[in-house]
Image (cartoon, rainbow, N blue to C red; front, side):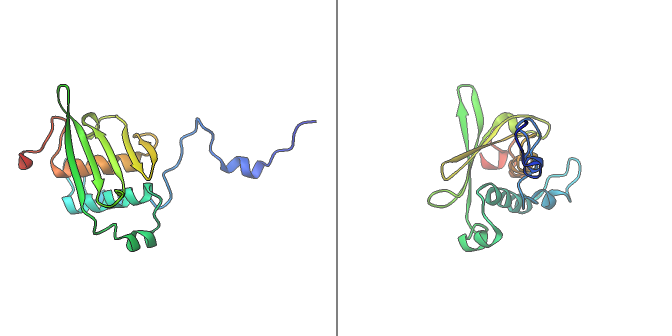
Length: 159
């Protein structure tokens, strides 16, 4: 006799090889939908979308975002060098501990590239790729492009 299975429960749980849906509440990409083609979003619009992504990945509800003051916290963007020059950017949202740390390699910054962005919050590490967290990946890279970063390094306005 075959073992009994709960078909209702099994139908809801995605298999490991299936593409997983975006996290609930992640609608940050809607902020950036007004910008088409080569037009870059403003730093304020991209920053608002970035904060929403960071809050969603950290598991914050809208009430927690307001209570924690996530919308008012400063965002620090720090470029870092590797053995051959510019290697990437570290983005953190101010706090103790930081309210989210993103490690973005230089290869991830151009719009048509594929790389892995690492997000860490409270000891939990998540990998963002275009296939696993496509919207979050797009928002993080759009924020860096709005600040003027490209694959080659620090924007002209920062030097």
